[in-house]
Image 1 (spheres, rainbow, N blue to C red):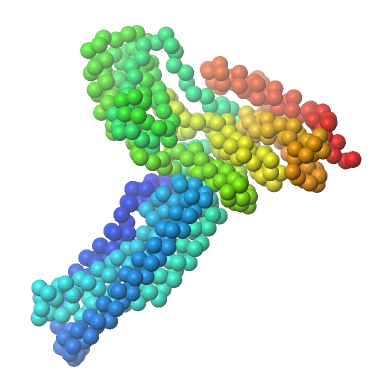
Image 2 (tube, rainbow, N blue to C red):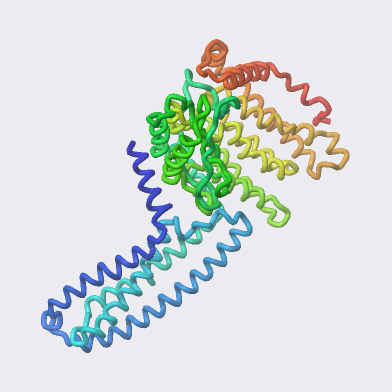
Length: 518
């Protein structure tokens, strides 16, 4: 509960308070400045400290103006360079990675707030002196000058160091991964255990039932998030209405992150056992549309909120661009694969569907979301497609999946991970025949390492299958099934069969035609 509250507070500050820098600047200028000027207006510091306050104030104005000029000059130069670097990083990696760089980074907002607030704090007493010409605000100007010195001597170098570290691709990919891990924990709080369904499949609408389609009232954009707490009101309202006895289910049609078109995309499908009157349909649509506007959020851009695939999409984009001939940076691609592997590991141990989906499912609302199989496809398919000719990339993909295997106790997820590697058909690409024909532009040593990596993967996979057998997990799901959905039951049976066959799989069959020791 504490973690969820922490996540929500962070979400408010990072994703919604977009003008935090301006806000902090206003705090410096208005709150501190106003408090000091009120204090000075009521206390004569010239008499208190026995100084010529007018002479000291006039000399300090010159110093503060110089500091303001330096701050403005440095800030303009620095941020001009930042935008150039951001543009280069955006074009080299992905235009999506830096879209909210200044908005969502709390430390950058603090730096901006300090610079804006310091300049304002130095200008504010001079502006006030125009109206109160017999009252120099020496203390306020002095504090503003101290902030300016602090900004130049400490905060500015610290900001440059912070930017240089955070503009590094490793920091960018790590930040994406951290955001995704937090989102996974929020959406999937429970780990999978024996006695739960092995997998999740989307609910299918019976074509013989009567349906009312609720179209999107929003401007064209991407489905950013759904407030599932508010969505609960939907079934409560329909069940209390005069057609409540006929109501079967409400189905969310788009997945979070999908493109939504106004008056075209279906957001909800309301299913009834019988056809209802046109007058009842109109009333229902009007009331449900009000709930929809308050529940669904459509934005111009996708975000990490409830959209794990978006984070994976960014990592995949960076990886693909890194191994393109224009960039030719395989190390960055390997870094992305490592981060994707950690996301895949976290997903592999979680229970699907999400906690919100299970809660709403019991209240006649079916949520549409990705399943584990689709997530793994998103993680690796495109990287393999564009990097399959590079043995270093292929080996890292295999290794990132191999590392996950000992942690996976869900037989279906284990089957998906094994299939992900086996369906690459690596020995169709990396074999001695292709090497001799010149189709592979690699050394024979690299060819051997692919074979060894694949052999290690299969050994680890078989070992994990054996562990699940010893725990009685495979036998349990041969005998017991926990879903009324026939598609889920069949998929569970198929997964158990696949693992049992794979365990006795003879690797020598695949080595045929690939005699590397010659």
